[in-house]
Image (tube, rainbow, N blue to C red):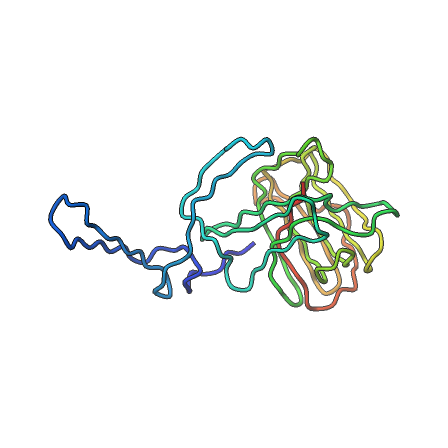
Length: 238
């Protein structure tokens, strides 16, 4: 996933830090102004991260509270635990719940997950590194990865590549709206792992790498008659 260049106030790339003291030495009357591209203050917050048992695992200061221009975060399928997405200037952080992407079941023709995406058109290549993934209550629906999707409806056609918490990377796809999804899985692969999803016309291919150098295709290239306009980005379910 390519991080946008630092050309506007929405990015966290530092330009200048100016300090002003309008009083005497040691009086504590100090003002600090931090400038970002575009000359304005970027929204910032301190982010406290918790695991599924509400144990605090880390604190991150200076997290940007808005996504870069063109990106949006949505909860597909109304999961009970809603997700969110943030951007700190160099990477995206995505959280989410839901049953995930369920394949090879005629009883399930819809999806439930959090989707941080941007609108693209035509041929697309997405690459992302999934650093870690922890199953929530041993839930098989816990997934994290990449997706190219026709639209935000719960039964939309899509192609996705996901890593699962039980040691496997999976290529999933739905060839027509509101139909069953299909999948192909490669076992004994776990996070951290690099994932790649490619679209060339109506041909979709998923691959993985453990070193960002040697890539292995998952299953076969699949044909999905998707329109040229698409949603592309990061998925998380739990």
